[in-house]
Amino acid sequence: MKQYSKGKLKLKRATFVLIMIFLVMLVCGIILLFAFCLNDRIEIDNQISDAINVSDDVSSNSKPIIIDNLIVGATYEKKWVSSNKYFLKSNFKTDIDIAVYTDKTKAGTYKMKDTYTSDDSVYANTSYPNNIDEYFAISENNDYALSSQFREIEISKEDYSSVKKALGIYRIYNNSLNIKNVYEGFININTPVKIISVTSSKKGIFGGIYSAIVIVNINTNATQLLQYSYTKDIDNSDDFPLYSVKFLSDLNGDGNCEIVTRDVTEFNVTYNVFEYQNNKFLKVLSETMKGK
Image 1 (cartoon, rainbow, N blue to C red):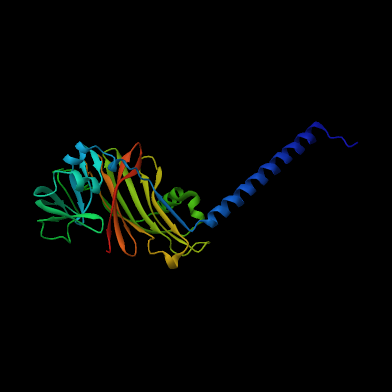
Image 2 (cartoon, rainbow, N blue to C red; image 1 turned 135 degrees about the vertical axis):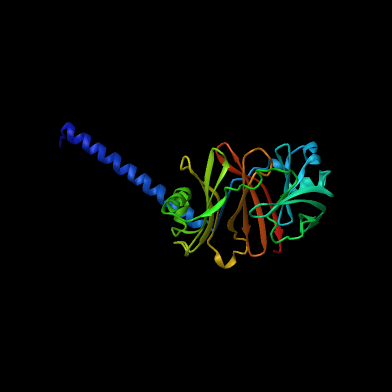
């Protein structure tokens, strides 16, 4: 009978354990790859639904947030109110003062004359004469509403590393990186961030494309995949969104700027508001203009 020394026996056992670990990892990898191959569409959106569950008291006292004449929602006492709740319950739908902002500065205080619905969305008519320059309007006169520190900056090598880190395992769908824009701004005085919008520069190994927005905390280098969408079926992707960053703004007056993004599909435009909560961003408002 063949005998082994203690050293050889330990080596044999260690080799067996390593082989088993390798086989388990290989099987898991194949299963994961297979699961990824089956996904024709993936969408990541960190969303909470508090805005549609607020009380009637909050809804009735809420005042609107207007972007491109679309009422994306409302706010009262730092609480978010959905556009639908605002339209049904708010007492402030006509003849109220609103502060209008362009992409660079506050344009002034104007009147919101009335509200109306179209294609299941709520819109506002305002007395501001130049709708092309109007970025957004809110009812409160908030000096910190438009972050003057928000600006587009040059793309760096570090930005590509940050995007790769944020995408993580989703890079398997498309390892090409086409950074479109990089912005820098402050959520508050202690939280400087970079906001990076990125798309596929070519089809991935499964034939699909993606669009994404990545947030980088400049202090900690922590990254967050704010929005991500992937489609394999490019020929039938009229609902596939291309993401872009619009501006930073403290829309509810709590001292922290929200991130406003835009999703553009073949037929619709959607505006989203992301709030900074517990060191990450969550979508608190979203509203769509149809047929744009």
